[in-house]
View 1: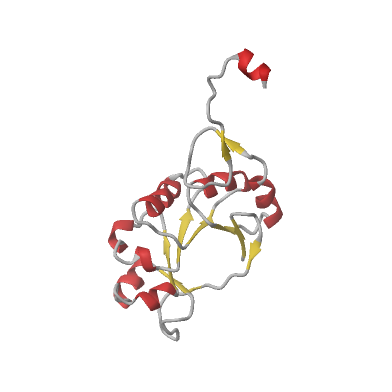
View 2: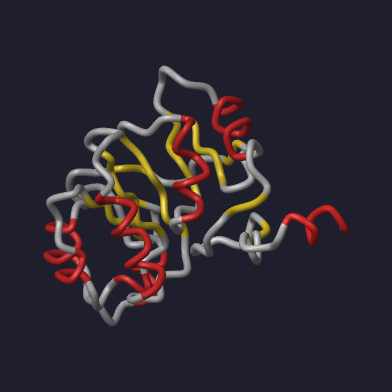
Length: 172
């Protein structure tokens, strides 16, 4: 498993995905399902939650874990298919509405061509699928330096006004 951050750098994977908490303590850097999170953790235990991540599929409802979200150390959103854009909306919702500030990871069926869109919608890292390299994701992230509309990120400059006249542009 290769994890790439918003700058395209490979980062060390400090998290382990587990099916149950058997054999794991509260400070192990584990990723669990929403069901395990709800059954095993107290929403007031902020220390344990900061070492806990949750893996959400497109079928999972974020509102069910709303009380936990601000304190989780990681949320992983799984793309079942690259053409399914629901995790983009979920990422933006987590950042904007739930004020999630920690690592937000994209995994599953993601393509290097999507890298800039992932980061712009709020993802901070990508679990690179085996058929791709970290370098392909980094290249995609570096492909654009300007954007037409604002987004969650601030990694690109915005084009302020596309309605400038030809003489104004020529004068520059």
